[in-house]
Image (tube, rainbow, N blue to C red; front, side, top):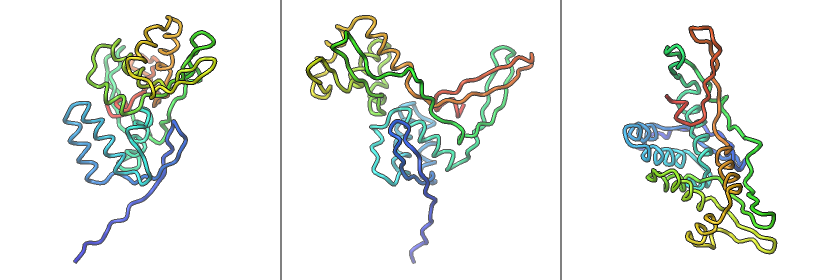
Length: 232
């Protein structure tokens, strides 16, 4: 005799970078097992687990690898709120009085912080410029083993150029070789590269603040800006 099927609730999550709403279901026991196994492994295994869980739980057509990294973190956080508990219990040590403080964060209140100064159009000399796109999960995963910061930035950058343009033409980056893109970047002036660095430093991110008074009666603030911060 066939066992009864268990119905699950369906809800929508808006993808921050596109505004598109997709249908999801909560974690099931099988997804909890995936996450528990990943937590005992390396960081790369955790990323793989997040991808698999999101893919499993999404009813719509979704290429997880093409999500921006902040999309991935946001979707997982909202899935966790619907699947386990929307309240995350955190503990942080105050670096002034060296005491540990407990906090409860409602994950439903956590959103993506958009910096108004983030600009993906990099003007180089008034005629030549480029359009950047946010690093995807696939790019982040590919760069996981690179430890040299300069090499890491260059490798991420060549995979986040969408187009290069001049006064007459637009050149899609996907139609150029990596070597051609590297040579283009190596000829940038310092001010142009600073604009690129600003694009990365002002990218959207998860954001929430914890406010409290420590034992010295001083007002203190903890800024949470990555997925790991909400599960410390």
